Every structure is written in structure tokens, then in C-alpha cells.
Amino acid sequence: MLIAETDRLIIRNWRDSDRDLHFEINSDERVMEFFPMRRSREESDAIFDMVRDKISNTGLGFYALELKRDGAPIGFCGLNDRYSAPVEPAGTYEIGWRLAARYWGKGYASEAARALMTLGFETHSQQQIVAFAVAGNHRSTAVMERLGMKRDVAADFDHPAVPDSHPQLKRHVLYRIFREDWRKAAIPERG
Image (cartoon, rainbow, N blue to C red; front, top):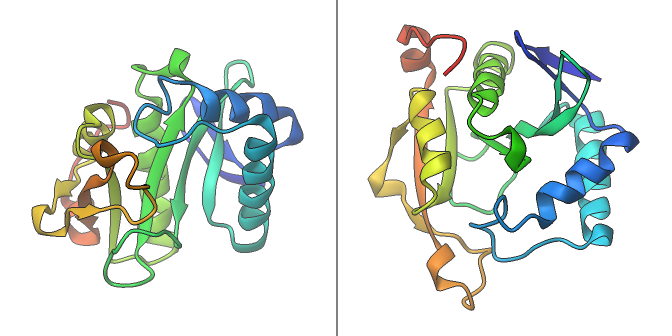
């Protein structure tokens, strides 16, 4: 299932051939620095199946990113309508991403997220899109800012799914962009 395309990326549902990359991302210490756990192969495969099924059934989820130049899967970016963070109003889409470390710093997350913001605002008629991350995750918040998102300090929160055994990962910052601001912004295709 093709979701969208950009100059360099195909955004699509997951294929069985993507399982190794999915596990790599979910078990890599650098990629998972701001998450309280690393996934085993069995756990990663279970999440993989759940995400792929959700995309097939609803059209929403964290989609696989594939390089057009060689067909290599590099990570994911997606729109989520169900999450454990306290975001208002209910039904607001979250945008999120995670790439294998070897693909960091090339603008792929921003490029995919821009295409998916178009999908969220134009096709799904969202009034706003949010993103959130651990307060110290400057790589992710830099992407949010490149996308034109603004931090909503009053909406920062302690993530309810982060266990008390990881207090340094509980505090999350929330960024959002409203449809009107997205339409006004002249965001370049890459960045």
C-alpha cells in the first residue's frame, strides 16, 4: 500500500522483507536512547504485525520509508490517531518518525513528515498535528521546528507509559502546528 512519495522516498506499508530493519531500529541503543526499553526480535515482530495491520485497516500508522534510489528501507514516519499522551482535542493526529542511525542527518525525517502533514491536513482535514518527545531529545525537537511546529509549553507532560524506573525519560515536550500556519508557511521540500 503506497501512502505517499517525495523526491527521494516512498512512504508505504510494511513488507515482510522490512522486519530486519524494524528490529534494528527497535533494538539499537542510539535510536532508542530516549525510550525506556529495547525490543527483542519477538517483541519487534509483534509490533511490526500490529502496525502493518493498523495501516491496512485504517490507513493510519507509522509507515515504512524506502529510498527511491535503491529500494532500501530506512525507518518509519507516520500519522497516529491513538496514543497514550494527553493531547486535546481527542482525535488529533500525532506525527512521529524513527530512522536507522546510518540514515540520520540527511533530511529524510523532515522530508517524509512534510508529505505526511499534507496528507493529514488536506486529505484527513485535521485542524492541527502534534508531535512530542522526551524533553532532552534535541534531534527530534529540531525536526519539529524545521517542520514549522511550535512548542506548547503549557501542554508539556509526564508520559504515562514511561515507568517510574526511568524518571529522566518521563517529561515530554509537545509541539503543534495548526492547518492555517502550515498553509502559510513556505517550507522548502528538504531540510
